[in-house]
Length: 459
Ligand code: NAD
Image (cartoon, rainbow, N blue to C red):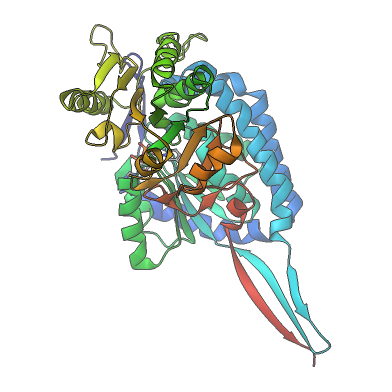
């Protein structure tokens, strides 16, 4: 009997649809089809691949409203955030289209009268793209757009929490001219993902949690399959004594609570210099009180439900642990039990310290811990007291001062007076438990190619 995914609206708990999951046999058949189709896709002129991805971009623009609505319905993402995601993914696609041809070009690093040394770049073949639900357009496109442009075929497994969006992405790519056998959705939960990565693959490109990433790396190591992992974070920000606390509070509240706090690079812990601590906390709480929680389809909603119901208990446990150890719960911090759906009241905890789970394990929800510090040395020590290494930020009026802290961070990205920001022009990477490899920027295009060295001696 074939298994199904039950797609549920996280704002109401109401079922939306059942979707059949892939089986081991259907994954085998899809992998074989993709292997055959990839050869012609890689040989196709650049223009064929470029035009298909440009058409995909145009379809996203034309169908932005219904696509955002579907995303909001199945993940609970506030509609204004869903529209922003579908609207700005097109900037990433443009970046990849504008730069991939150059990355694919052959190079001749050496030539003399008798020998020429040349480098060409081959695609990897069939790659698996195992994706997360929190930004399915962003994290999906970071992988499948450069993979397709560089001549790979993609077996795409959307998250079980954003499957309908995944099916829609496949439909748009096929309508845009990407052959059906070159981009194939593989549908199901983690068990399906685990079966998929056991197939012969040119690479596994994963976005998700550290725990799953570590399992995937262990499984792939037996076959020596190339693995790229974009994982979670416990991203810190430090408000220096020379920062404007009101400006920092507005920026950091948005960084912590945007997308209901379910962003890989959400601000997860804040350190504030003691001289501006009180005014920062006051402005921060005022800002969070202004965030409207409600129906994700209401354009005024800023905080929606959590996408996964299991996370309600997880966040409540972090709050209780912190309060038990001496934190002050200034607002929120418990589920809304009166209404249906996975609603959690946005939580601000102050007087936190590193004995508390909220300062150590990824919250990935509308919850923030704030800790007072006496100066830069203490802030640097605390910011670095983590296994993760995705981003770190500093608010300060003076860049040279901020830079002394940012230089000390062992993270893939650093921010000065901003946070929770990703740009297609810059490489996006995590260190430590935040991942291996890199998406975006030109590095995120090379990630789908393997070099071939040509030693050419004249006869
Ligand atoms: P998750 O690890 O639960 O699942 C991610 C994907 O892996 C899903 O498609 C799931 O079905 C699949 N999967 C689960 N077990 C598997 C297995 N054994 N083998 C193969 N596939 C398996 O993560 P999630 O809840 O979807 O995403 C949230 C996490 O993702 C957070 O930690 C967040 O920080 C991180 N994230 C990171 C980035 C980044 O760019 N660094 C971006 C978005 C999300």
